[in-house]
Structures are given as structure tokens and as C-alpha cells.
Length: 330
View 1: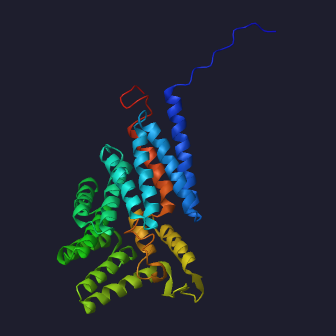
View 2 (view 1 turned 90 degrees about the vertical axis):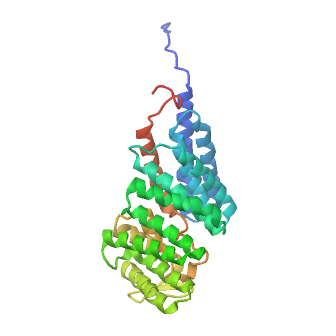
């Protein structure tokens, strides 16, 4: 029998406990994304809530978890918004915006994206509830942030302009809305060329703006251009209440059409999340237009949650390596 001294196991440190919390939170988040992807919304909600609880527990010891927490809150808010549970979505977005506002994004573009998305989410959910006075500062702040951080001619600025244009339409500020839409359209055409498919939602919004003004003849060309752009991108030529007819004449159930549309868009070009989301629902997909599920003007497509979330983690880990505390040694 050996009498040699056995090595002592190192005691578990707070650092190890925090790491384990974060790993559990990431697994819960990934499970939520997977559940939502197969239509299990209730399970997705529970797993997002678990991930948020774990990130909250880790946040005191690991500043990286603050960005994770803000991202997870945005994702849970999107689930609630998809259900038209606007008050619950607003609560999530409000917390996410407050946390994101405290994050530094120097050298971490993904964190800047997170801050912009948080502002956009919160402004949108307030607008959707008719709280225009409360929504306006956040929508305008999102545009100012996009212009300052990403450039006045960036695609993110284009979609922030689109958001302000929608706000202008709902508040009867039609001239300002038209200016925002036209500026956004010019940015897209600069990036992708004239009559680009990426501009389909802006064509639709310009047509809707003329409709809101009662100028139906002026609105029709924009609306038709929107349909043509979607047909060009997706190969779809008609819509019924229960199915979409493809260019080859075959029929596709509306739900499957949405999924194939998203896949077609994402494979067509490596576009921003905002641009991809713009295609999936609009006048073309009238069978599922109410509520406007998966619209750019609604929320980030859930299929992007996992990839965007991993980008946030990678960015924050670069900016703030794992530490024993917000001000502790690495």
C-alpha cells in the first residue's frame, strides 16, 4: 500500500463557478433557439428565461455576461412580440436597452450592433403600442447611433431610416417619412444597384405611405415594384390564402413558403439580418401578414439568434477577457 502523499485538489474558485454558470446559460440559450425553430414556443420561452437567470447570476463576476444578458433579453422579447404579448416584450426590451447602453464597444463591432438592435427593439415595441411620444427618442437615437458608429451610408443606417420613416407614417409626418424612405432607398441602391431585390420592403413602405396619404395612384407603382422585386428574388408568382404558387406552377403551403423564402434570401447573398428579415413577410405573403410575423419591422429572425449570440460572446471576450470580477485581475 502506497503511503505517498496524495496531491490535493484545488478548491473550486468563484471564477470556476462563474464559468460553469455561463456554460449552462449558453446551453439553455441554444436549446431555446432549437425549440423555437421547431415551433415549440413555450419551451423556447422557458429556456430563454433560464438562460437570462443564469447570466444574471454570472454578471456580477464576469462583465462579459452583461452583453450576453442583453442579447438574451432581446431574444426573449422577440418571442413575446411574435405572440403580440407587447407588455412582456417591452419589459425585456427596456432591460436589454438599459444594459446595452452601459456596454463599451471599442473594437467590438458586434457589441455596437447589439446596442443598435436594443434601441431599435425598444423604439419599435413602443410604437407598436401607440406610445409615440415615448418611442420617438429611441427611434431617433438608433438612427443617430447608426450614422455615428457605422456611417451615414451604411446598411444599418438605411434600416434605422426605415424605422424612422415608419414612425413618421404612423404619426402623420408624411414628408419626413418620405424623406427617410428615399434616403434609405438611395443607400441600398448604392450598395446593391438600382431595382435591387433588397429594397423590396422600402418599395412596399413607400407605396403604403402614399396609401396613407390617400394618393392611391402614386402608391400603386411602388407596391407593384415591391412585388416584382420579391418575385425576382424568390421565384414566387402568386399568393393564395392557403398556399403560394411558385414560378414552375407547383404549390407550396404558406408556412413552408416562409421557410423556403428565408433560406433563399440567406443563401442568395450574405446580407444583414435587417435586410434578410425584410423579405420574409410583406404584401407578397398576405396569408400570414397579420400579425407581421418575421418582418424586418418586427424582430430578428429566430434562425439568426444563435449565430448573432455567438458573435456577441466572441466580441465581448475579445474586449473583456475572463476575469474574477469587473475590476479584477485576469
